View 1: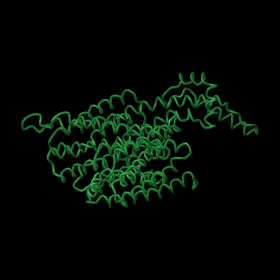
View 2: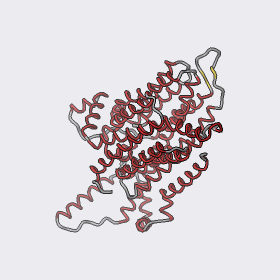
View 3: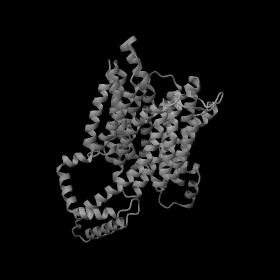
View 4: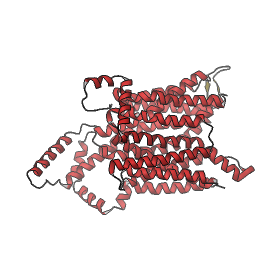
Length: 519
């Protein structure tokens, strides 16, 4: 019999350990010789650093620092041309500059996380109760499947061009639009009407496209304009860690909201319902309203910026179809961008299939082991264990990035994910299967910051949101395929493992093109 509580406790302790190792406190109490030298230099210039921090702007207006560095570079090049020794940059200047950059990044990350995590909270609150709500309304499994297919189809169709519109019109505007559209989707859930629920699923598909593209595009654009691209990996790692915490919190909030009031029509014979499974959607609605207001108040607008283009190009960009066409041709003409799109679709497709299949897989194994003694699985403990594994994965990413580039780390991530699916397929016990599933969840925690950092360096800024949504088209095909076919959990996991093998091979080629074949 699987002791899920024991495994949760062990995973939690492991997460605490790797989180401490990835934190600044570890470097403070267990500094390496390099860190010691840096800290000594930093202490000698603390006064100068604090002064620069107070004068440091948050956004791309960096009070002439770039001009100062450009002038230094010009003098450096002139000295080299004359055959002289290159000027020595004082360590104190570097230390002060690093400290100032860290302060700017912390401010930027706080602004991003408060909005992004509210958006993630709204999504996590809804997820576990969509199917349950449709079932409570009395719809058949086929009708529910149609609603789900409509949602993913909407994401695939509308998402293909809405990203280009965000690049042109402003990403902050489309994040506010995300909050409005997703809030409208939540409101439709109160109606026991298939057509209204269908509209809600279509709106939800559009909102999902925005959630998984425009937020990330805004974050990368803000880092670029602030001169903080070297901090991008840390930002994605922190966001993924926070997302996992929010998922656990959302599960608890949603459970209480779903049990707060009785599920019933507002009046006799009315098609408008309240209470029950609608509670989580109402809480999500509040989170979305706050999310939109904070994005409007805290975030600066940013766009897909590019070097000056000719008039024909500008005319092509003026329409959504033109932006989509340019994003498509950019993707297929650049092997690195194309590889990123295929790899992300393969991994995230396997992740969605895993989400659909882990429950029947574990349930079947538990019933075989326990027989008549089976009383159900502790889904809350299992879900929390998965999320803690994701948190641990994001911390492992931070540790690994001290010595590896994301292109190198991603090879390991996809290889380990393939191994995890092989374990799931071959395992005959619930315990070993659950452990293998936790291993895959750690890979999920490492994947998002790894891929986010790679895409931030590879995808051009002027077409970023449009290309990100193009990446989701094959992903949605994979999800629709898994929904429309009657695959068993074992066959589904074999498919996932195969996709991970392909992703590993593609990532090896991508790593070779970008940094060579060495590790």
